Image 1: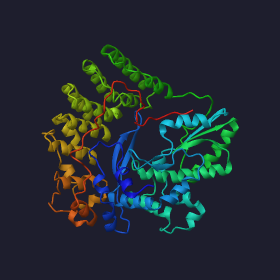
Image 2: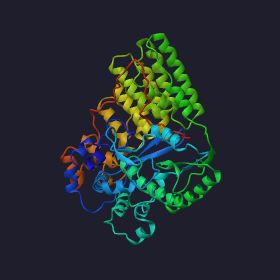
Image 3: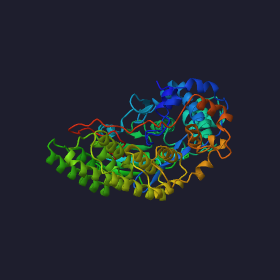
Image 4: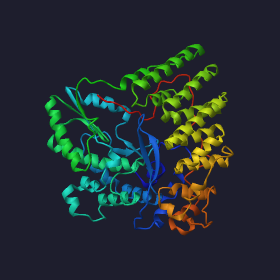
Length: 518
């Protein structure tokens, strides 16, 4: 059963953030904090943090204010048996949230890596596939549609009592987003739970019209199979009607009816890369490394919307490279970061791992890459890439040059600013950091605004203070409790993941891969 502390500890902060960002401290004090939290919902705004989606597209992660996130997590955990029973009403969902015992608070009932096999079995005897994608699902989800989904639209419009389970979720999501009714935060596990309520409701309504559907839905993607093409068209028309009734839209570019057997998309490159083996002898390993990276770079150009390089690094992250082969392997890693910036998180862990086992790293090359990387991504406000570049600098103890520091000074992103302040505190940023715009954010009003994380954490760490010198945290009951109990959201002692290296790498990586199913 899902509980509040787990939703906070493992499911609050987005998984894409660098390692020092933590919710362990607040999770340890959940009962106390809930006991002092005001009953009335308080409007707040989420911290935003931009991450790469595919080659030229972005998505904004959102980190809700801790007061409102605590209350939402408590509400979902307290009502978990009822929510779980509602999920079971879908016969085609492949993304029912269940308790995770490894990395997050919840996970989908079918692992994303097994979806292809599951759909392969479900499509037997069919000649056509209908793929329907709900456009920008999280960002467009209408909060009032949550009670519509849970109770039925007619009932929900008449019964607006805020004590009702789904009505309360609606109000809580609004309170996280300054009263806005469009969208739910991308990042927290609570949003997977909430989005599935709407997804299951769509499944139920569709099944009433077509009770013998074959296929499944994974979050916002439907994969349905038919003997006749007209059957697929009929279901598509009805699905469009149902989705529209929830104030959502179908992504026409990704929606299609195709004849089976279908083209496998990224399955081809993924299987080819997964078949590579790396021999133990030095020369054979070197040849395989060169061939492997060349193939990964080739496929990344052929499939620009897939995370080919991220997958490729994830698969060999634990490969033990001969010392003689390390220089070329390292150079490939650095090229991989430039070619697919989202791969920097895995590349950082790999570089840190080899630093810890005393391999000679090309520090000058890495330093040059970091500075060029920061300047480029600052130009476009690519938050996640900048944050990981700064974190890589800390892990390898590489100083940031003045020009890069000036670029960072223009960014108003709490994640980036906190890592930059940590680097400055450790002597890795000596000059060029203009903190005047950041200091302007050190104000009590920001504790419930979109820079709440910086406003609280930089003050607790003593890195920044308000211009007036007043202790604005002491004036806020909730945040003063956090400070008094030494609750932190940034752990200066955290390190990158150190991989356990082995002679052969033959496992599928855990990192998310965008799959194309039959």
